[in-house]
Image (cartoon, rainbow, N blue to C red; front, side, top):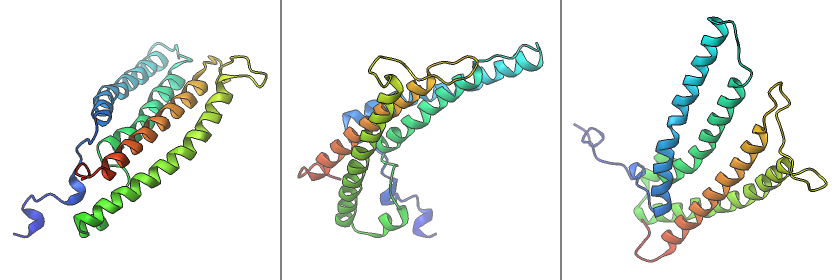
Length: 183
């Protein structure tokens, strides 16, 4: 029996949350995962209405797109909270814990820089979707027959999730750089 069969954990298998924010994100994410079930139920409702009652809806496709888009965006923060985000496991598992610590710092700094740039861009996109060029509050709509303000909601949610991930990377970096607190 080789060591891979013995059930020994690899270094990349450490998926525990490292901050209180991570723990909260995981709890919210676990609840938010139910939104996929709700989306599936809404789609089933549409199928029944369309093919059994010959009464298709105008809101189902855009609503499920919104719900799933928000969940997919939040998934980035959830993966980061579970320590499953950016890493090449085969390399990570081959190096010493000291090198892993340095890789974790590099990943956190890289993620922080990327999220800073992305938050700036996401703010610009969200701001333009919420306000008219002359400054009045006006949420961008989809342009469909139903015409909800879903694009503005999705773009605003993207900005909020990116800022959340920015804070996560910052907290992870602080923890990694604090003597005795890093992994």
